[in-house]
Image 1: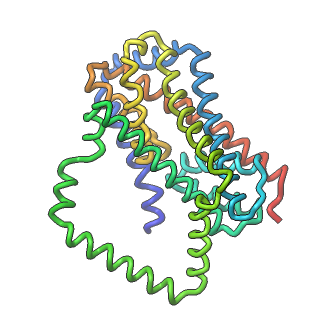
Image 2: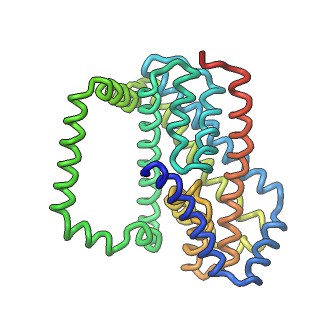
Image 3: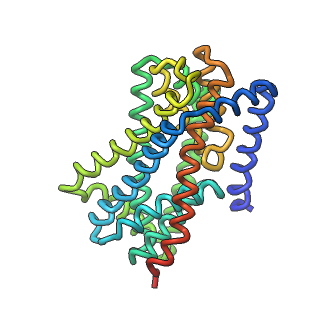
Length: 316
């Protein structure tokens, strides 16, 4: 039942936000959005797609540094293909991609799956830290509107009023987890390998500089891909360049709510820009173009990876 809910809920959320978008716009506005998208300059769209694809390629190469730090030599093509397969899987079933990616990397590179999952988790930790750094940067630039949208006051009050109950719940869950961990040797071995994968980042040594450079390149490319959309349509040029950076942050934090941010991402971008006097149709055009560029390259390269990888390599 839980597995079905994990699949169904993000899809329902995506459909719900598509419905909200439909309700918030008139037929005239929807026609105008479509007209804007059709008039987009292909050269800027292609550049945006290039930066998006390049970021995912670097992500695959960055993972190789982690696998090397725990003693495994990996194939760069398999590493890169696994990233596109991961994101394609997330478009179909939310948050399924990481498990698929860990499985692909484990089977084709002959690495215990716990370790591959651990290294992927280590990557996620780094990316979360970078996203928080970006969020703090936005705070420094005094874009409080974005920050307030992430941290709802009612939620903060709820946490404050129920801190004892929340703490007790965390302690009980932790004790249950430790109990099962001690009783089951298989689970213990699996989590030990995950821990080793997580700690791979501490063993990078001389490759730490490359890992940091790759991480900065990944996020710089994502930001550049988002920024290029501004130049694809004349009407988007009216958006203040100072809004692009925080709008990007809004997109980052909204994309995980549904399958690859379907419905949520464009609406979140539009609602943020509306706070600064940007028309709904302009905001939605920006959001849908940015989302579509990433979705297209994900589907193209993901499909190629699913098809080509088994032909070139075997997991036997």
